[in-house]
Image (spheres, rainbow, N blue to C red):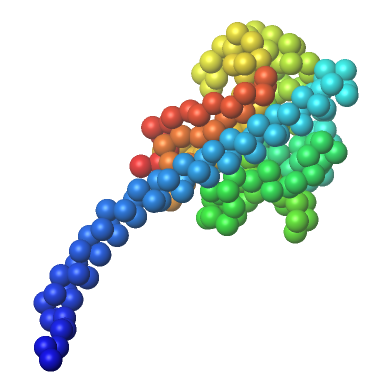
Length: 227
């Protein structure tokens, strides 16, 4: 009887083919996984927006003024980036009656990552409750409320204050659909105060998800982040 076998050369050829296929498929699979996480992140932000609007309906269309809670959780303006403290642990507590799943306060791409454990990103209330999004319009605690902060304001007043106080940090809004409420953390490579090891670091490669004051989600491509 003739005996069939595999030569060493044939085995090496098969291994080489498998390695080439893996090298070709790995970036595609990684991109697909990140795209899925980005989609889940946008759904998290959408639910935060819905909870925020439920709060507005219950409190005469006024946004929360919980500067006291922000201070109690550890208000910490940063000397580098971000230049203030946009962490939103206070919002997680204020909106808890409307959304009790604290996993919604962290993008799946940031939880467990290097970025997700940075003190300028994560705000921990207890081991089961933490937030990892930023809210730039609730990042300061001065009294009176700064024009670019929204503590205790109606959405219309917030828009009017931004319109009356133009800044190079944001475009002049025409309405609530132009006003950002919540965003993924990011560290632009063009900001000199960003530590060299953090420049370009972001939750998602090349951009970020943004929740706007009217509740819609928009992806912003940002060449200052990612690679």
